[in-house]
Length: 331
Ligand code: NDP
Image (cartoon, rainbow, N blue to C red; front, side, top):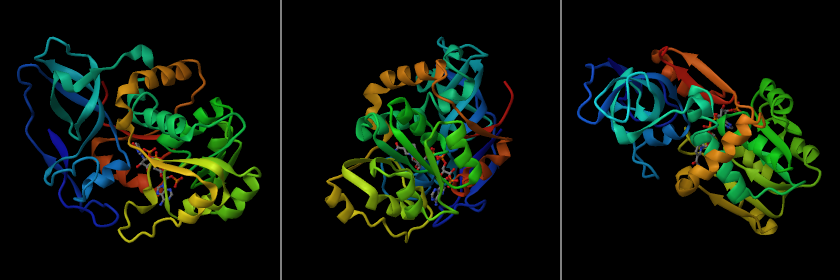
């Protein structure tokens, strides 16, 4: 067996120096446990936070232990009455080729709800993040202007589409022309801005003639600096993430206070798990939209267990469109 361990905490950008593939023994399922072959691994920006020892909303990853996160796998041996060999399951599991898990820590995947990997994206954590952040905090109304940063990513690509379903005028910001084309052509965004090649402030002014009512922020940093001056009175900002600052301990915070005051805007940070009690409602909404073809779900899939670290590093280079996954084995 093999697993990927955090062997050193990154101070800035994580590299191969921090994540290592380690040979381990094959685990054996105990009573009430199953042995799982990992098929797909989700790599996520929030994991960068757990690599640091700083206090946060989840415990830091331990050094010299496997990283863990969203995984889809197949049961290959079961000591549980709830699962049989062959079942597809998802859960928070180690970045390992094989792992064991107690029966209560994993969920069976219902293939009628979507593809195997949908539980790591549109019907999982990213989907719920997009849905609750936008609907509960953003509260977009018909005809309002919604701006989304990291708009072509896992969360952002769903926010764009849900905002359209609520009748908003939607402007997405992303880092390549391929992504801006994807936002307009595939997701139905009204306007898209490439923050790496355009002056974001000027482009936003042109794209948002009626100002900005909702800013779903995934990135923070200079992109957000360009958004704040255009906030309308009583604008709402679901503060979902700030990936522009994750690798930079000296990053300047966005200069937002005066803009928040002037616009009497609401900015509210949230963690998707805040909405745990409503997950069922959120998943029903998302899976109905998905089944009816109202939500396009895009993935970027890298092949090979050994490429999990590279796929994770690639999130900070914008290599992914939609949800970044790594396929580690065939069923
Ligand atoms: P994405 O699929 O959006 O991948 C990250 C994307 O961020 C990249 O593709 C890249 O796209 C963009 N990016 C990377 N570096 C920068 C930078 N320096 N400045 C601007 N954009 C950058 O990831 P997720 O959808 O999984 O996550 C998006 C955000 O949401 C993250 O900040 C994450 O931490 C947060 N999050 C928060 C949750 C919560 O509960 N609050 C839950 C899940 C995610 P590009 O080419 O456009 O630069």
